[in-house]
Length: 233
Ligand code: BJW
Image (tube, rainbow, N blue to C red; front, side, top):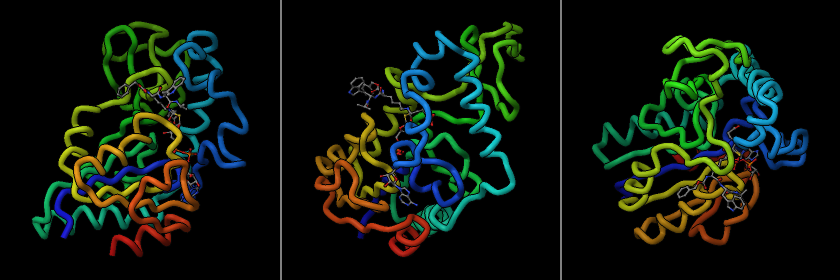
């Protein structure tokens, strides 16, 4: 019986909730250039463009039609069952910047690439709940600086959040599940090898074999709303 569980999720788990993935044929990177909207250099060059990109995705996330799907709900139920059974440690690491896991009821969660519903002040480092559009004119409610707010997300070349906590959990994992991620982006793409090195059983649940599929001991392929509840229950 697996004891310590680490789950990694990516954009694929939210696809059936109506949010776009990145690297699928109709995904975000087919429409905008990574260098323009997901790097610190892109933001320095054209903050209006980058704010517009995240404002549009934030509005979509907050629209009535975007709600957690059966895969998000299954992981929240799994967390509660794990706790009730005293089964061991549980950590959900998501690369997603949406809040669909929280809305489904997940609590032990790390947003390693940040959160779309937060802004960060580059002057005072305050992290603030943020549901409105962000603009270059916005004033930081914490320090009063104008124009210093940015989306609280992790762009290429930046350090993902809470890596110590994630590495510690992977180092004692007995079971590692990777759900709805293409395995293209480091360091998340290396988690399967760290979990294997710790002796964990590794499982990929994805629409199709990911880039690192061969690294997993087991795989179930299909839409997350079907394969995740089926595997978790
Ligand atoms: C379904 C489904 C359904 C569809 N059901 N499944 C060379 C040059 C420069 C940099 C590098 C380099 N080599 C390596 C690097 C590092 C770089 C990197 O990895 N680059 C690669 C692209 C080469 N990484 C970084 O810079 C990271 N920082 C870093 O490394 O710091 C140094 C360090 C860290 C730790 C220890 C020591 C040092 C930062 C990465 C930041 C990523 N940021 C983004 C954008 C911000 C957030 C946002 O705007 O949303 O994060 S990029 C984007 O990719 C986003 C995602 O979180 C991330 C991962 O994407 P994901 O989730 O895997 O989505 P997709 O679309 O790729 O895949 C979806 C999958 O779902 C597919 O497989 C589908 O089949 C499947 N699917 N529908 C189930 N219904």
